[in-house]
Amino acid sequence: GAGVSQSPSNKVTEKGKDVELRCDPISGHTALYWYRQSLGQGLEFLIYFQGNSAPDKSGLPSDRFSAERTGGSVSTLTIQRTQQEDSAVYLCASSASGTAAYEQYFGPGTRLTVT
Amino acid sequence: EDKVVQSPLSLVVHEGDTVTLNCSYEVTNFRSLLWYKQEKKAPTFLFMLTSSGIEKKSGRLSSILDKKELFSILNITATQTGDSAVYLCAVRTSGSRLTFGEGTQLTVNP
Image (tube, rainbow over all chains, first blue to last red; front, side, top):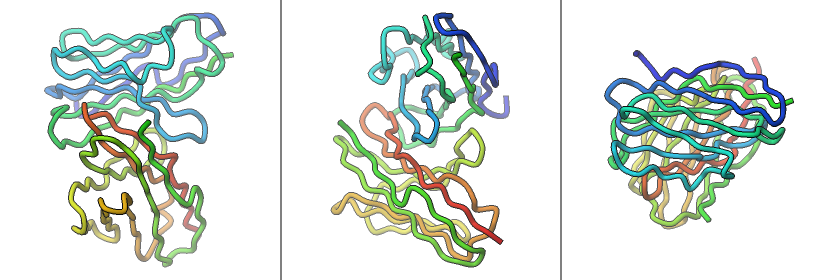
C-alpha cells in the first residue's frame, strides 16, 4: 500500500474485554513499531519488530499487552482484560530498516476507548 | 531511563512571528534526534539530526543539534496558520526505538 494502515480507526470496548488492533506496514519495510499516545502525552514506545529477530518488548506496560507480526508483515497488538487507563491512540509505524538511520512512517492510529 | 523534555509545552503566536521550540534529552546510546509534526493522528517526519552544529533546513523550518549540551531546537520563521500542530521531538537509541518528548502545541493565529 501507499502508507501504513491501521484498523479499526476507532474502538470502544467495555472494561475487561480483550481487543485486537491491526497494523499493515508499508510493503517491504522490515521494521515495525507500536506506540501509544494518551491524552496530552507524548508517544510512548511499546514494542518493536525487526525482520526475524526477537521483538523488543521492553515498552509493553503489563503482561496484558502482547503483539505479534505474522510473515514479517501485518502486526496485531492485543490487549487483554482492558482497563480504563488503556484508553489512548495506538500508533503503528514502519521503516525500511530498524538498524540504519531511516525515518519511521506512522499510520493514522486506532483510538481506543475503554468504558 | 531515557528522557526527552520539550519546551514550551504550549505556544500561541501570530502569523508572521518566528518561533523556537526546544528539546533536551538524557539518553544512553544516542543515535539520532528526530522532529515530527503531528496535526491529527499520524506524526509526519520533519528532520533527523545526527551531528552537532549542522543545520537542517526545509523551507521556513530549520533545526540544529548540540550533542555536547544535549539539546536541539526547531525554528519556524514567518509562521502561518498551517503550522499549527503539535511538534514532537524524539531520540533514537540502540535497537532503533524512539523516545518521544511530550510535544509542543503550537497555535498560529491569523
